[in-house]
Image 1 (spheres, each protein chain N blue to C red):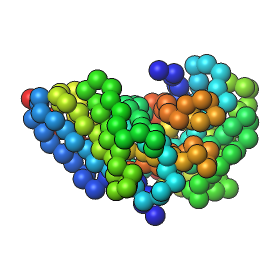
Image 2: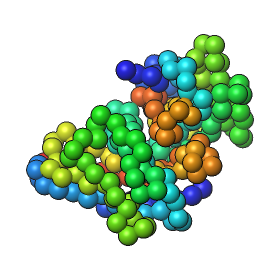
Image 3: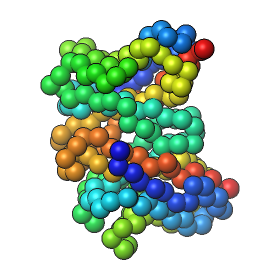
Length: 113
Length: 115
């Protein structure tokens, strides 16, 4: 049961352009969403999060958008930099459980110089 | 950002052997999680541990797995009799709602290789 889905396994963009990573979810009980960045053989690094009471959260070059009616969120990176190349995971949690995170499958972002 | 360290960074073991993976938070936390990631797959929740008790566990977390906080600082995940399919990266995380934030912070992971 894939409650969180990232349908694009990979994305390639040019340095300086916008990267848009997408994530869909099925569980309407999710009320908190996070994006993590991960390099091989390292732990996930927290990037940005958004509560379900908001539809946008911005932190520097990173912006997360939440569309609750579509059960869709996206991460925008502007401008993209080669150091952004990594695997990006979206994750979700609900207030009704212990806060465990349900992860998507990840999207590999490659930013070309 | 709060930090968590994990030891060892890489563990190689024979099938059927017991392994203990350790997580050491930098400061005093009450709420911990273990996750794993099989190569090429997504990160999966294993267990949450609050105030020295398991608060939730997934179907993966069967009788072969156990967690404890033996000395009030280290937080351990034990696999009693490892199987080939236990080969994965294992991540400890802390944070979560009872800590006052919904964000979980992950350690660098332990790569477990079962031969």
